[in-house]
Image 1 (tube, one colour):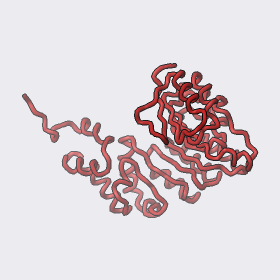
Image 2 (cartoon, helix red, strand yellow):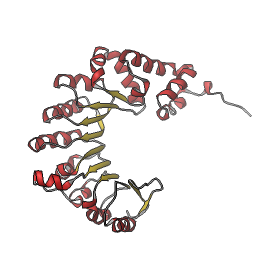
Image 3 (cartoon, rainbow, N blue to C red):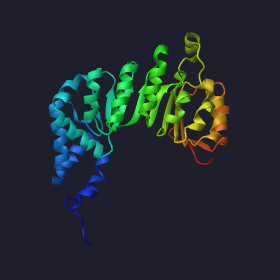
Image 4 (spheres, rainbow, N blue to C red):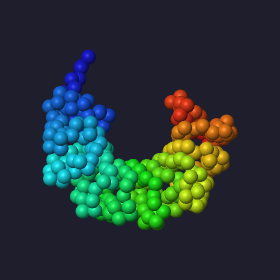
Length: 289
């Protein structure tokens, strides 16, 4: 019997393993195999230059504001890192705590895939992110949006639509999906937050769009996650036959009509996953399309 030593395995096959490694495993694996030493050297050099631990550099680069000046001062080192991350399908995680003048350069240094958190920014910053992400042909794989101020809403929704994320996390009360459904051509996962809806109704006097108003039009959507959503359980059950969602996650599912919800999910072809818990119910679709 012929035995194949890992050092004789072609590099293209070794590369297939890389995306599954965390930072420490990546460094050890690549240092042990001479033909992969350059990968480890890229991460090590970035860590030394940026003064960040390896887990903040691989498989995703967490670009924090505190290290942004160092990153901008060492573009070759950062670009080498993010090119490696792009090659293996990782992303650059960015918060919105950058100035308008920094955004273009931060975007240029990032990998092709970007995970962006719009937690504090107004429409000017959000629009600037959208503009440069489009110009530089980046892809937003995850977008988190904090509660939008009413007087910023129209501009923020427009910027979010332009970002066209693969996964979106937002507050249901902002009705983002209901207004820009057609623009979300790549949206595969949606996380809707429903905390204290009564408080938002009193303060804003706003209509929160029913799920049936926009979910059927999100043709690419496959995963739906909702938190504190007792107010929309009936609507969820009714709309399920009209959507192509494959999995549903309900966080803190404590409501009076929980049995009705579970019955409705079952009728729509969903089964409860073994990974469910008291605070998190995960349902997977096995039939019903």
